[in-house]
Image (cartoon, rainbow, N blue to C red; front, top):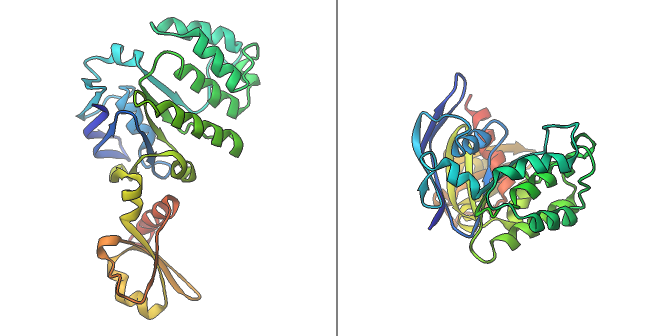
Length: 284
């Protein structure tokens, strides 16, 4: 079964649009959703959750059309958007007591275990929590009502490296038994290299690639060469940077001749994003 199936999602604003966004998340896996700020990550997530009305497209979660079964689906979907910035003068405990009434399968024991794991004091006011603690609180809420699909927008934002690493370990624990699936957007690509099974990359409202992580990365090569070598491959490069030694550029693996003398290396996710973004600057 697919945990999430997005087909030809379109949403047009005055100065931005999602264009035929399509991708699938298999049950029991983690998908990283990457893209620069303003690329369409949050708009896509809000569209998936029917928090913004789409122009066209189809969204299925756990085998059901989301819009047709929205109330039922939101019982088994946990979602978190960064930190908690609502009812800031209220104590954590009071906010939780309001929120848990909306979920039929709220599990107080599970919630308490995450408060302990995240070192959250429910007697503190929301305003007294650090940004990192707000993120953890939102996650505790999302994880405490039997969610089968977690949709998280920048869940590691504001966390220090140790807390981020612990959270990534938690994500991997959650999907181990194959019942829970996670989609999370982030610009911290190193997090995805640690824990994601699949990567979906959105750029200017369009999906550039969506595939298994190793397949995604191996679809590209980072080239280093002198200026004469640049002329050989220039027309095939996604984009490139010149330096005192020559150039560095990104190319689709299918467009690279491995018998050439140009140095080629496997890029990381951040490098792939940077060179796709640089392509816009080169051809403006």
